[in-house]
Amino acid sequence: MTETPHSGNPVTMTSRLVRVPSVNPVLEEGGEGELRVAALAERWLRGWGYRAAVSEVAPGRFNVVARRGGGRGPSLLLNGHLDTVGVSGMADPFSGAIRDGRLFGRGAADMKSGVACILAVAAELAREEIAGELVVALTADEEHASLGMEALVASGLRADAAIVCEPTGLAVMPAHKGFLWIDVRAKGLAAHGSRPDAGVDAITHMGHVLVAFEEECRRLAHETGHPLLGPASLHAGTIEGGSAPSVYPDGCRLVVERRTLPGETARDVMAEAARVLKRARERCPGLDATVEAGLYRAATEVPVGSGLVDGLRRACRRAGLPGAVGGMTAWVDACFLNEHGIPAVCFGPGSIAQAHAAEEWVRVDEIEACARVLGDFSRRFLAG
Image (cartoon, rainbow, N blue to C red):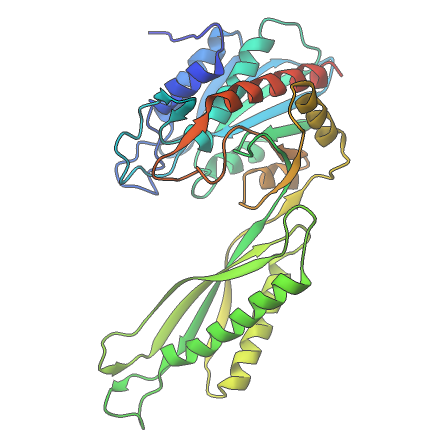
């Protein structure tokens, strides 16, 4: 059955999208991924006259890309991700119910309400002549490895500007932090617990590394900063080691996450980690440890004074919103767009505090306001 909400009501569409499970299968066993929700969005877009297609970007993982217009003006990309985190512990994760002005369910804030606002704009502009090209890109796997966005930029997609509708509480967020995972391994020497003369305790040695990283965290808090994002930071994510209480551990592994600011590179952070390890060795001369770079995602930003940011703020003010500017502390797919020459900012309904929460919700009035702002901005931008 073809399902086309001709009115393009963003609240109705949010509820419908939430009722279609799209849990990332990497994050939770039994998660079905994006196919059903991608197919639904594609049917709607085709019903509005868009050139739309679902593509498999990895086995069982799906993007939707749709276009309308083009040739006589600028191009605008509206992006959101289709996958959600898991639902363990949630009583009714896919209800899409509305109570007391809030819409509930997994993905309500992160980010099916943002996707619904994008689709509402698509429906609205389908009834108008536009000089530029509107590109709707709904992607897979943002909650894990961003396979969908990687495939999108690898396809050669171009646009003059992009809005990623992550939950920002209707603030315009042109900057976001990045991260690097640092893998630290300390070596010891296994021996019976009664033989301190023969054993080397890798866990105790790693304790010196932890203290040195704690000192580095304090340094970052005092010596780094960004006007929208605040200071860089780091924390210990996981630690493991040892085989039994009565055995000196011969190894210990620590993974530290370093949150980065725009302009910082993985090389910069690894040089910093090497200095941390040097300080740990000064405390523990017998320390045998290494640091290695793991997954890296860059921090990026669009200038606050850019036409994209200014235009979106003006649209907010026309809708009776303050047009506040903030920083997205979490890493987002806008990174890939910015790195491939497409200026991208975040703007969407909902709070990042609700993302991944045991009871996830978004305010209905924020969904409606976001759709109005996006529609106003998109119409003006695409007019050239």
